[in-house]
Length: 630
Image (cartoon, rainbow, N blue to C red):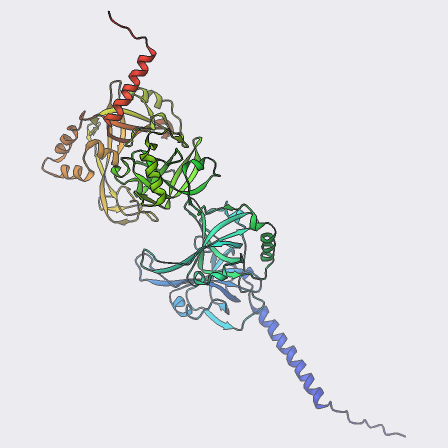
């Protein structure tokens, strides 16, 4: 019989043992990787209900390290970055104080890290550009470690907005854009107001909504060679800041944003096909209105509006400066001028701010001007222009175009009949800033003002100053107030809000420069009637032939208040004034009431006024039979 004892088992060959060992190692590593991935919290799930989490993400954007101070405390530092993980969700992270100093040099845009020990809070949309409802704050005990690059995490996460949709967005805002570079400008180096040396380049991007917009690039992005932008490549821009600019909308690529040329994306391929098929010859609608060219005024009759142009012409008429408060509560100053050129056409152009406040003598004697950056729109059934803030106004230019206009005016243009593109009131004619609005007597003005609606009406009357209200119900009425003269944010115009006795301006939230401003209640009269009109600073100074500083000094002098009132009384009935009156229907304590103000008053142009009176006499004689005495 064969032996029943077992024979010893055969041991695997060494090569087989090695293969099994490697397979076991791979399974072990895979389990560890899966466990590690499962331990990371998805950014899409972050909320204030989770206090302990660790995320693994790529830094897709990183802002500058900034200093700030709160309530007089010691200055601290802060910076922001955007974090993107495998779930495709992106969140804003802010680092404060010591954490900002510690991690600003360590976190690099494009690298991957793990993040923990931060706080989750509701996103502040004023500073947060990500779409996530929440944001992260690291202000103490943050734990951040760099990890190997994760290929599954995108380098940039785009959320594109087409340019047609940009037109209806509330600005300022931030968007991602994808478009064909339809044009670009050379690199421009300049110094900012703060003395910083800057470099920028403006490109025009267009997409298949047949819309285009100018976008400014800065720094190294702007310094790239021209050939990068040639050939109409498709560019993807992340974090483009949109703002109103020069009457249109323009973008600026933020420093923490991203720019990719011709990335492998479906949107890029779609735009390439559109440009090759029809986009290159499409009639694009520009959101920026930045292409202004020198044109003659006559050609504006057929131009598609709105448009931005450059004009060169003779000032055939100008109006006085006009100060008013906009619907948004902004104090504005404007002046309207009428210019004409060799096309025998004229148009009204509105100047704003400091340009409007220049001395009348600059606009007198049919001055020649070159105006660049004029936004032309339909207005009151005609066409009118408005000089944009970024435009320019040059008096007596020395250019070939200006010389043509000068010769035309000297060789008969001054006597030629002009085609007016702008619709003006009957009283708007005349040289030297003659009357604006409908010419009438004080009695006619009062009757007409009782019929006005919320749409303002403007009248022009000739009268004299009869009285200034110095007392109200027996109490002394102040003739001026102390106003803040600090410039408003984003403007060169002063604040002009009333300051307290300590000089504190509630609007600016500080104590700064201040100056007196006149605010009078004046009674003007003519042959027919008289009317009380509220008269503000610039106009009041012309009426009294006295500045607000002189009025304050007079009251503070030896004569005191009586001396100031005596100086005011000396102005009564002294000279005829051309008075511009503005009337509209306002609501006061729930009751409709007509608000009548003196928008402007200055000495009558006796020559122009005399001619107007003679014209009126001729018209009356022509209507009535002439009686000849025997």
